[in-house]
Image (cartoon, rainbow, N blue to C red; front, side):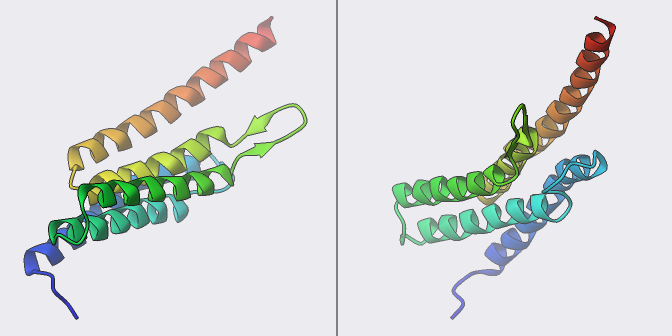
Length: 152
C-alpha cells in the first residue's frame, strides 16, 4: 500500500539520481587509476543504497513512526555496514597495506549518499568534490615522494 505523495515520489527520484551522479566522479577516479576493487559500479551503488535507507528512515520520521533517535540509529547502522564493505578492499601484505584510500572512498561515497538522503545536497556536493580533490592531491604527492626517494 502506497502512502507517499507525488512530492515525496519526486524527491525520492531526484535524491537517488543525485546520489548516483555525485558518486560517479569518485568512482571514475578510482577506475581510471586502475585501482583494484570498487569502481564505477560499487561506489554509486553504495551511495544510492545509503541514500535509499536514509530516505526511508526520514520519511518514517516525518510520519511519526520513528523518533529522531531512530533516524540516527539508521544512519549509524548504514555507515557501519559501509565501513565493512570499505574494509573488504584493504589488503595487508607483509610489508605494506594497500587499498586504504579506496576503502575510505567507499565509506565517503556512503556519507555522500546519506547526506543526499537526509536532504543535505550541499554537503553531498562538497563531499564529492573533496573526495576527488583529496584523491588527486594524494596521487600527485605520492608520485612526488617516489621521485624524491629515487633521487636520494
